Image 1 (spheres, rainbow, N blue to C red):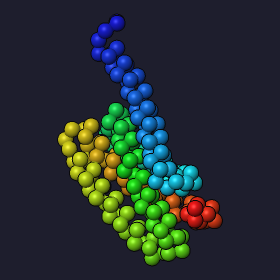
Image 2 (cartoon, rainbow, N blue to C red; image 1 turned 90 degrees about the vertical axis):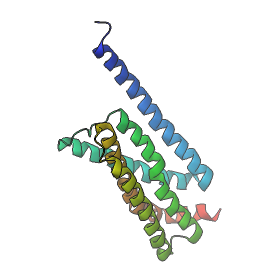
Image 3 (cartoon, one colour; image 1 turned 180 degrees about the vertical axis):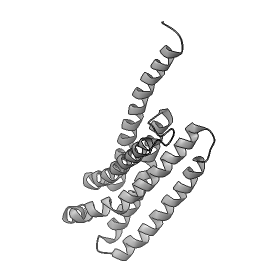
Image 4 (cartoon, rainbow, N blue to C red; image 1 turned 180 degrees about the horizontal axis):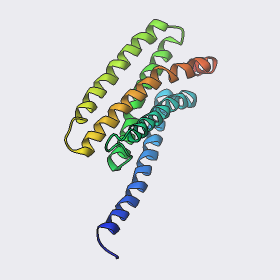
Length: 181
């Protein structure tokens, strides 16, 4: 059969896969360029991207775990693929705030980092609240979008508060050299 639902469905899946990957790659590239323009340091840009990508991978892992527990609609679909791109923009904010605080006051100001951490947590909680309300929609696509976006906000928050500081401390001398220039 040359026409019909099966042909149209197969074509839509092909287009979806191509466009979803393009969107994610373009999102990563744009975020990287913007980070570099802000930090003027390839090293800090790389650390921020690592934090972001680990958070996104954790989000995808959580989706996979929920799917394995037979939570409905948690498979990667058209909407969830584009939520991944959206989380690239939302999830990077947390790391940007932390890196800016460190660039202003250095790695030794624990109190300053704690204050920034509180602000970052509040920002993430407002994102989770906003996305989480979409998770109560009756339409499955919107419900999944809200749940996945809320999960992504949490996973990127966790990596911003754990992975990023660990990377900054492990590479302290390199980071301090970058901040001096």
